Structures are given as C-alpha cells and as structure tokens.
Length: 270
Picture 1 (tube, helix red, strand yellow):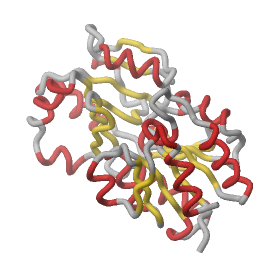
Picture 2 (cartoon, rainbow, N blue to C red):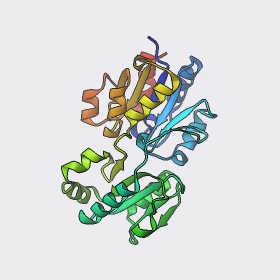
Picture 3 (spheres, rainbow, N blue to C red):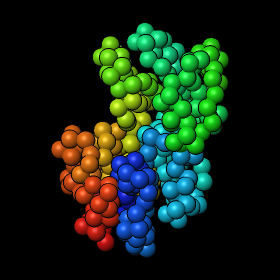
C-alpha cells in the first residue's frame, strides 16, 4: 500500500545543523506532493515558529496541516484547529507548584494569548532562546496572573542541563502518569496533556483524513518523536537521532546534514 501521509519533525530532521532545508530535501518533498502525498510538519514549536518553513515548502491553505506544541494541536497551516489537547487550570497549579519544589524555572504557552509567559522575574536564558526560536513575544506574569480562563497548551521546565537533570530526578513517579512528558532538548522538559503527543497528532490526522496506518510514514530524531515513529506504518529515525529512537524505528536514514529526509523518501515513497 502506498504512503499518503508523512509527518516530519523539524529540528535535527527536516533542517540541517545550519537550520536550513537543503535543495535535495525540498525537491524530494515536492516530488512527494506531486504524487498526492500529504506532507505534515510535526513539531514542539507553535505555528509562529513553523510558518517560515511551511511557506518555503509551499504548504499553504486549509488542505495542508501541521502538528504543533508536540502534538497538543493539529491545525491547518492557516490556523484552523482540527484537534486540541490542552492542560487544565488544576494541572497548571500542580505543575507550577512542582517547579518551585524542584527549584526549576517554568514557562508557559497560552493558546488564547500568542506569546511565551515566564512566571519568574529573573527570566531564564533558555526561555529567551525559545522566544526567539519560535517567534513568540515574551511576557512576565506572576503565577497568580494565570487564570482558569487561560487555555494552557504546553508548560516547560527549563534550565542548564545538569541542573535540570537534578531537578527532574525529584519528580514523583505519578507525575509521569498524569502528563505526557518529553525531553525535547537537554535544557527543555515539556509537560503536556496526557492525551497529547506527536503519535496522537498522527493518529488524529489519520482519522481526519480517513487513512490507514500502513498509508503513513513518520520521520524524526529525538525522543519526543518516538510516539510518532511508532504510530506510523513506516517509522524512520535520523542517523543523528537518539539511540532509543533508532532502536525502535523501522528504518534509520542518513543524518540531517546528508539529506536524510530525501533519502528516506526516495526509498519508500518516490
């Protein structure tokens, strides 16, 4: 059965170490689109952090889709929400209180307010880094300023890798049972609705489009891509990917600096 839908991670997968989509990758994706294959970027970023890449690939309009916030949202590239798995206000209270208990800075993505919210006056440099990376303005709010009217799509513990390691070692086991938790970078620990994840985004989109599992393919490199790779009919890991991802994938392609996405498409789609 032919592949009709491909979900692709961005950082370390679609783009190379210079943060560019190479001409070989662009050409392979264009050939796949010409065959009627849906190309869907699936990322931890919000839509604002993906728009440039979508435009570069010619993915526009309400018949093209994107998975954002590590699968918490599936939406059209124009912003229409298809599925949403957000955090509740009581989730926020628990996650924020835990950040103080384990001495780790926190920042928040609100769906109703397109900006990154820091709840620490001494804003962590990794929060500033994310603000620039995903093209979201940054604001400070006290923890009390977040209200039940806010739609919280993602929360993140952030810190220097060694400090974050120590903090995360203090999290109770039931924390992981309540939430989807992904270490998207050594300095980012993302906390999502338990139903959220890139694998769930692929499943939601597959159902929306009326496709079968064997008609789907997923390509990624990091552990936050693992659920997506396992959910796909063909799960592809980048050679530069995390060991666990490569172990669980059906196929390991070349690294992101050697047109790994194009190599995988040539093998399975084109």
